[in-house]
Length: 129
Image 1 (cartoon, helix red, strand yellow):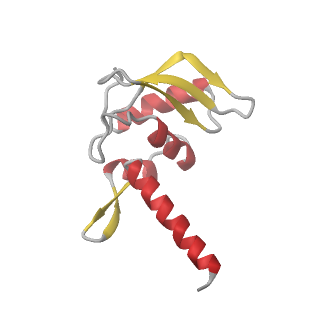
Image 2: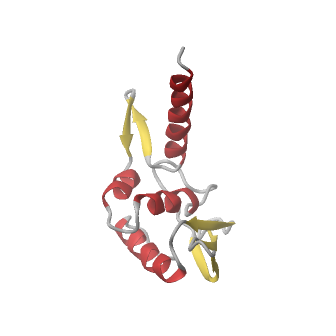
């Protein structure tokens, strides 16, 4: 067996699992489909695709979110930091269970993140609580 093929399949399966976990794709009748959130990530003009995936990966509550219902964290912008590379990390809290986490998005400062977050929640039909 070609080693590159085995490695590629392994990477493919890893990313399928990650994208399912982020609520971007789901399996239906042995087919992989975009979820509503995945459709948003693919079509919105908010940020880049990498920033949208970062947001969906780190901006959701890991305790309360399900594949069909993502509970987005509320960022605490007074506790945000932007790295020298321009990546934002902000402390965030789940409005439902009050657990704390961090939202990390590459190549996005605090001002840009604030506008991105508001647009994302509006487009995804969620309220900023």
